[in-house]
Image (tube, rainbow, N blue to C red; front, side):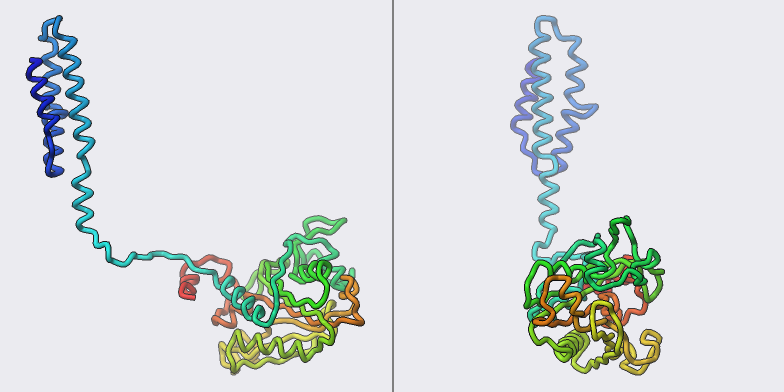
Length: 337
């Protein structure tokens, strides 16, 4: 009986399969329920006592060697066969690739346009105090923006709130830097407004600030005209309407010709042919003084725009809420941008 085990060990040692089927047949012959190992274990009871130790050791060695041989070859032929079927020159299938959000695309485009004329980027905290968000910007205590219905207050006395504009970043920048200043402040802002097709409680702004000697309103107009043509096309027109902002004087609102209706009038532009995109004006001398800048020596202009409004105009989107709903059907339209 021991000689039979030795012969089987020799057979295992010399076994070299040529296919996956031969490996499986080998496994069944040795390790299967009807294999020779089970027969040898069944015959163990008939082995004389003096030979049992050597016989048992030989059987265990046979089992270990057979299992090791199966483990060594199992799957190797399958891998080779599959490898032969793969065309390594075939282009990779790029399914379900992500893309930039349209708000990020427009933000980057705005930043790039103003970078070309010397504006640098400045950023600040989204949680602000009263001084940087209101007082330094010349907003009086009774101004409606300070009301709980318009601003998300985190605490009062002292007032801590979610910033309502990125003008607070400009205040911080003016406190930390001396003129000449030419900075752009993009970021997310918050206002307590009802969500609709034209308004949202969260939106994104880009605000620009230019402070230097002898800066005039004509400089502001040419800067914004340059931006409009770079963003919307060479044929774009702008118009400035007198307005009021506590931190600029004089102030204006800027409209661009509506490219959704080609300046003919539609529901988005309220049949005027123009769509408001930003507010602007010459920086109020009091704001400059609040930041330690000599208002008799320096003047400047500031402007601010909503990124969503720019995106709506550029891409012909008529509902602001689409930018916040994460609808893949909507976002896929921007995958090539």
